[in-house]
Length: 27
Image 1 (cartoon, one colour):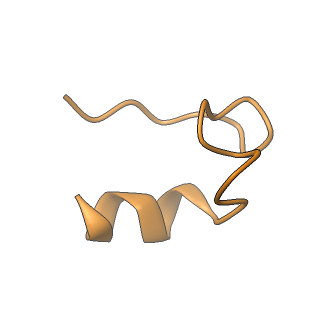
Image 2 (tube, rainbow, N blue to C red):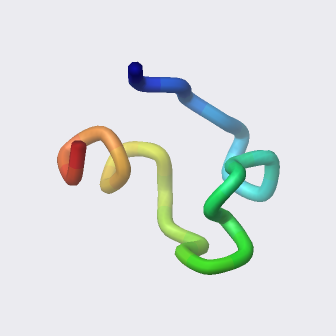
């Protein structure tokens, strides 16, 4: 389940304001 958001639109953006690229690698 990998959803790409536009940065601030990311659910965890508030806690982890990181680029979606980093999020993809993390998951």
